[in-house]
Length: 279
Picture 1 (tube, rainbow, N blue to C red):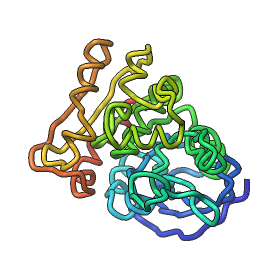
Picture 2 (cartoon, rainbow, N blue to C red):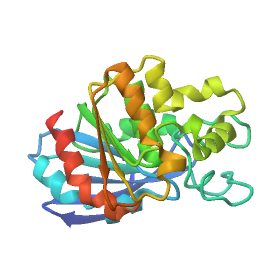
Picture 3 (cartoon, helix red, strand yellow):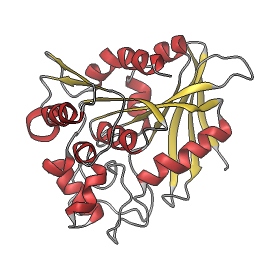
Protein backbone atom coordinates (compact mmCIF):
# COMPACT_ATOMS: atom_id res chain seq x y z
CA UNK A 1 0.00 0.00 0.00
CA UNK A 2 1.25 3.46 -0.89
CA UNK A 3 2.01 5.75 2.03
CA UNK A 4 2.46 9.52 1.85
CA UNK A 5 4.71 11.15 4.44
CA UNK A 6 3.25 14.46 5.62
CA UNK A 7 5.89 15.30 8.22
CA UNK A 8 8.73 13.84 10.25
CA UNK A 9 10.43 15.29 13.33
CA UNK A 10 13.30 14.01 15.43
CA UNK A 11 12.28 13.49 19.05
CA UNK A 12 13.97 11.67 21.96
CA UNK A 13 16.33 9.97 19.52
CA UNK A 14 13.48 8.63 17.40
CA UNK A 15 11.19 9.89 14.64
CA UNK A 16 7.68 11.25 15.02
CA UNK A 17 5.92 11.00 11.69
CA UNK A 18 2.52 11.86 10.29
CA UNK A 19 1.30 9.90 7.27
CA UNK A 20 -1.64 9.67 4.88
CA UNK A 21 -2.95 6.93 2.62
CA UNK A 22 -6.01 6.04 0.56
CA UNK A 23 -8.07 3.66 2.69
CA UNK A 24 -10.00 0.84 1.09
CA UNK A 25 -11.91 0.30 4.35
CA UNK A 26 -13.32 3.82 4.58
CA UNK A 27 -13.11 4.86 0.94
CA UNK A 28 -11.36 8.07 2.01
CA UNK A 29 -7.87 9.35 2.69
CA UNK A 30 -6.87 8.58 6.27
CA UNK A 31 -4.17 10.30 8.32
CA UNK A 32 -2.33 8.77 11.28
CA UNK A 33 0.82 9.33 13.33
CA UNK A 34 3.62 6.95 14.28
CA UNK A 35 6.51 7.40 16.71
CA UNK A 36 9.42 5.04 16.12
CA UNK A 37 12.16 5.12 18.77
CA UNK A 38 15.83 4.72 18.01
CA UNK A 39 16.62 1.09 17.25
CA UNK A 40 19.02 -1.24 15.48
CA UNK A 41 18.49 -1.48 11.72
CA UNK A 42 17.11 -5.03 11.70
CA UNK A 43 15.30 -4.77 15.04
CA UNK A 44 11.55 -5.23 15.31
CA UNK A 45 9.80 -3.30 18.09
CA UNK A 46 6.57 -3.89 20.02
CA UNK A 47 3.69 -1.63 19.05
CA UNK A 48 1.15 0.28 21.14
CA UNK A 49 -2.09 1.37 19.47
CA UNK A 50 -3.71 4.51 20.87
CA UNK A 51 -7.34 5.27 20.01
CA UNK A 52 -8.53 8.84 20.56
CA UNK A 53 -11.81 10.24 21.82
CA UNK A 54 -14.70 12.32 20.55
CA UNK A 55 -13.81 15.29 18.28
CA UNK A 56 -10.15 14.23 18.12
CA UNK A 57 -7.83 13.43 15.23
CA UNK A 58 -4.40 11.78 15.41
CA UNK A 59 -3.02 15.20 16.36
CA UNK A 60 -4.43 15.48 19.88
CA UNK A 61 -2.37 12.74 21.47
CA UNK A 62 0.55 13.34 19.13
CA UNK A 63 0.86 16.93 20.29
CA UNK A 64 -0.35 16.67 23.90
CA UNK A 65 0.03 13.06 25.00
CA UNK A 66 3.66 13.28 26.22
CA UNK A 67 4.38 9.66 25.28
CA UNK A 68 7.63 9.93 23.33
CA UNK A 69 10.12 9.99 26.20
CA UNK A 70 8.60 6.84 27.68
CA UNK A 71 8.35 5.10 24.30
CA UNK A 72 12.00 5.93 23.59
CA UNK A 73 13.08 4.52 26.95
CA UNK A 74 10.91 1.40 26.65
CA UNK A 75 11.46 0.78 22.94
CA UNK A 76 7.80 1.06 21.89
CA UNK A 77 6.29 2.11 18.57
CA UNK A 78 3.24 4.33 19.19
CA UNK A 79 0.50 4.52 16.53
CA UNK A 80 -2.41 6.98 16.66
CA UNK A 81 -5.09 6.74 13.95
CA UNK A 82 -7.90 9.21 13.29
CA UNK A 83 -11.32 8.76 14.91
CA UNK A 84 -13.48 8.76 11.78
CA UNK A 85 -13.38 9.02 8.00
CA UNK A 86 -13.27 12.55 6.63
CA UNK A 87 -13.61 14.29 3.30
CA UNK A 88 -16.09 15.15 0.60
CA UNK A 89 -19.18 12.96 0.64
CA UNK A 90 -18.65 11.65 4.18
CA UNK A 91 -21.89 11.88 6.16
CA UNK A 92 -22.02 13.87 9.39
CA UNK A 93 -24.54 14.36 12.17
CA UNK A 94 -27.43 16.30 10.56
CA UNK A 95 -27.55 18.67 13.52
CA UNK A 96 -23.78 19.12 13.64
CA UNK A 97 -23.43 17.54 17.09
CA UNK A 98 -19.92 16.71 18.32
CA UNK A 99 -20.77 13.20 19.54
CA UNK A 100 -21.80 11.59 16.24
CA UNK A 101 -20.45 11.64 12.70
CA UNK A 102 -17.16 13.34 11.90
CA UNK A 103 -14.68 12.83 14.73
CA UNK A 104 -16.98 10.30 16.38
CA UNK A 105 -16.72 7.01 14.51
CA UNK A 106 -16.97 4.92 17.72
CA UNK A 107 -14.72 2.23 16.18
CA UNK A 108 -17.59 0.32 14.54
CA UNK A 109 -18.45 -0.71 10.99
CA UNK A 110 -21.71 1.13 10.30
CA UNK A 111 -24.61 -0.72 8.71
CA UNK A 112 -27.11 2.15 8.47
CA UNK A 113 -27.26 3.27 4.79
CA UNK A 114 -26.16 6.89 5.28
CA UNK A 115 -23.00 5.90 7.18
CA UNK A 116 -22.16 2.41 5.90
CA UNK A 117 -20.13 3.53 2.84
CA UNK A 118 -17.39 5.24 4.88
CA UNK A 119 -17.79 4.64 8.62
CA UNK A 120 -15.83 1.39 8.82
CA UNK A 121 -13.44 2.23 11.63
CA UNK A 122 -13.50 -1.28 13.12
CA UNK A 123 -12.17 -2.77 9.88
CA UNK A 124 -9.75 0.11 9.46
CA UNK A 125 -8.20 -0.20 12.92
CA UNK A 126 -8.22 -4.00 13.21
CA UNK A 127 -7.38 -5.00 9.62
CA UNK A 128 -6.20 -2.35 7.17
CA UNK A 129 -3.99 -0.13 9.31
CA UNK A 130 -2.12 -3.05 10.97
CA UNK A 131 -1.26 -4.38 7.52
CA UNK A 132 0.05 -0.95 6.54
CA UNK A 133 2.11 -0.61 9.74
CA UNK A 134 3.63 -4.05 9.29
CA UNK A 135 4.63 -3.18 5.73
CA UNK A 136 6.20 0.23 6.34
CA UNK A 137 7.52 0.25 9.93
CA UNK A 138 9.82 -1.96 12.05
CA UNK A 139 6.90 -3.38 14.02
CA UNK A 140 6.86 -6.77 15.72
CA UNK A 141 3.25 -7.73 15.07
CA UNK A 142 3.54 -10.58 17.58
CA UNK A 143 3.91 -7.98 20.33
CA UNK A 144 0.97 -5.58 20.23
CA UNK A 145 -1.04 -3.75 22.87
CA UNK A 146 -3.89 -1.26 22.76
CA UNK A 147 -5.02 1.76 24.77
CA UNK A 148 -7.32 4.73 24.34
CA UNK A 149 -9.20 7.66 25.84
CA UNK A 150 -12.96 8.11 26.30
CA UNK A 151 -14.55 6.94 23.01
CA UNK A 152 -11.11 5.56 22.20
CA UNK A 153 -11.02 3.81 25.56
CA UNK A 154 -14.27 2.15 24.49
CA UNK A 155 -12.57 1.15 21.25
CA UNK A 156 -9.46 -0.18 23.01
CA UNK A 157 -11.51 -2.27 25.44
CA UNK A 158 -13.83 -3.74 22.81
CA UNK A 159 -11.08 -4.46 20.29
CA UNK A 160 -8.76 -5.86 22.96
CA UNK A 161 -11.48 -8.11 24.37
CA UNK A 162 -12.44 -9.28 20.88
CA UNK A 163 -8.85 -10.14 19.92
CA UNK A 164 -7.18 -11.29 23.17
CA UNK A 165 -4.71 -13.42 21.23
CA UNK A 166 -3.42 -10.30 19.45
CA UNK A 167 -3.13 -7.75 22.25
CA UNK A 168 -0.92 -8.51 25.22
CA UNK A 169 -2.11 -5.50 27.21
CA UNK A 170 -5.28 -3.36 27.26
CA UNK A 171 -5.68 -0.08 29.09
CA UNK A 172 -7.79 3.05 28.96
CA UNK A 173 -8.14 6.59 30.23
CA UNK A 174 -11.72 7.52 31.20
CA UNK A 175 -13.32 4.98 28.85
CA UNK A 176 -16.97 4.64 27.88
CA UNK A 177 -17.20 1.16 29.39
CA UNK A 178 -20.86 0.36 28.68
CA UNK A 179 -22.06 2.36 25.66
CA UNK A 180 -25.36 0.50 25.49
CA UNK A 181 -26.20 2.01 28.89
CA UNK A 182 -25.19 5.67 28.41
CA UNK A 183 -26.38 8.51 26.12
CA UNK A 184 -23.19 8.85 24.04
CA UNK A 185 -23.15 5.17 23.24
CA UNK A 186 -26.84 4.69 22.62
CA UNK A 187 -26.87 7.58 20.16
CA UNK A 188 -23.82 6.30 18.29
CA UNK A 189 -24.64 2.60 18.22
CA UNK A 190 -28.22 3.25 17.18
CA UNK A 191 -27.15 5.73 14.54
CA UNK A 192 -24.48 3.50 13.03
CA UNK A 193 -25.91 0.01 13.60
CA UNK A 194 -29.68 0.48 13.72
CA UNK A 195 -32.28 -0.39 16.32
CA UNK A 196 -31.40 -4.03 17.04
CA UNK A 197 -29.64 -3.72 20.39
CA UNK A 198 -28.41 -7.31 20.23
CA UNK A 199 -26.04 -6.13 17.50
CA UNK A 200 -24.71 -3.42 19.79
CA UNK A 201 -23.33 -5.90 22.33
CA UNK A 202 -20.14 -6.69 20.41
CA UNK A 203 -19.24 -3.00 20.75
CA UNK A 204 -19.82 -2.76 24.50
CA UNK A 205 -16.98 -3.88 26.80
CA UNK A 206 -19.26 -4.82 29.69
CA UNK A 207 -21.59 -6.76 27.38
CA UNK A 208 -18.63 -8.56 25.81
CA UNK A 209 -17.46 -9.64 29.26
CA UNK A 210 -20.97 -10.76 30.17
CA UNK A 211 -21.05 -12.77 26.93
CA UNK A 212 -17.77 -14.55 27.72
CA UNK A 213 -14.92 -12.33 26.49
CA UNK A 214 -11.84 -12.42 28.69
CA UNK A 215 -8.48 -10.67 29.08
CA UNK A 216 -5.52 -11.43 31.35
CA UNK A 217 -5.81 -7.98 32.98
CA UNK A 218 -7.15 -4.48 32.39
CA UNK A 219 -5.84 -1.09 33.53
CA UNK A 220 -8.12 1.96 33.73
CA UNK A 221 -7.39 5.45 35.04
CA UNK A 222 -10.34 7.74 35.69
CA UNK A 223 -10.34 11.32 36.93
CA UNK A 224 -12.74 11.94 39.81
CA UNK A 225 -13.32 15.53 38.59
CA UNK A 226 -14.26 14.32 35.08
CA UNK A 227 -17.41 16.15 34.01
CA UNK A 228 -18.62 13.06 32.13
CA UNK A 229 -18.00 10.55 34.91
CA UNK A 230 -21.49 9.92 36.26
CA UNK A 231 -23.57 10.13 33.08
CA UNK A 232 -21.34 8.79 30.30
CA UNK A 233 -18.39 6.82 31.71
CA UNK A 234 -19.53 4.89 34.80
CA UNK A 235 -16.40 2.79 35.46
CA UNK A 236 -18.12 1.03 38.36
CA UNK A 237 -20.12 -1.00 35.80
CA UNK A 238 -16.86 -2.33 34.35
CA UNK A 239 -15.58 -3.01 37.84
CA UNK A 240 -18.61 -5.12 38.67
CA UNK A 241 -18.43 -7.03 35.36
CA UNK A 242 -14.73 -7.81 35.81
CA UNK A 243 -15.31 -8.95 39.39
CA UNK A 244 -18.05 -11.36 38.27
CA UNK A 245 -15.88 -12.68 35.42
CA UNK A 246 -12.66 -12.97 37.41
CA UNK A 247 -10.78 -10.50 35.20
CA UNK A 248 -8.09 -8.63 37.16
CA UNK A 249 -8.94 -4.93 36.82
CA UNK A 250 -6.76 -2.13 38.14
CA UNK A 251 -9.17 0.82 38.36
CA UNK A 252 -7.50 3.95 39.68
CA UNK A 253 -9.70 6.93 40.57
CA UNK A 254 -7.53 10.04 40.36
CA UNK A 255 -8.57 12.83 42.70
CA UNK A 256 -8.75 16.27 41.08
CA UNK A 257 -8.23 15.13 37.48
CA UNK A 258 -10.67 15.86 34.65
CA UNK A 259 -11.22 14.48 31.14
CA UNK A 260 -8.45 16.45 29.43
CA UNK A 261 -4.95 15.70 28.15
CA UNK A 262 -3.57 17.22 31.34
CA UNK A 263 -4.95 14.05 32.95
CA UNK A 264 -3.85 11.70 30.16
CA UNK A 265 -0.31 13.05 29.89
CA UNK A 266 0.16 12.78 33.67
CA UNK A 267 -0.36 9.02 33.67
CA UNK A 268 0.71 8.14 30.13
CA UNK A 269 4.14 6.85 31.16
CA UNK A 270 2.53 4.61 33.81
CA UNK A 271 0.37 3.01 31.16
CA UNK A 272 3.23 2.59 28.72
CA UNK A 273 5.38 0.93 31.38
CA UNK A 274 2.51 -1.41 32.18
CA UNK A 275 2.18 -2.29 28.48
CA UNK A 276 5.92 -2.78 28.02
CA UNK A 277 6.10 -5.18 30.97
CA UNK A 278 3.57 -7.42 29.22
CA UNK A 279 5.26 -7.41 25.80
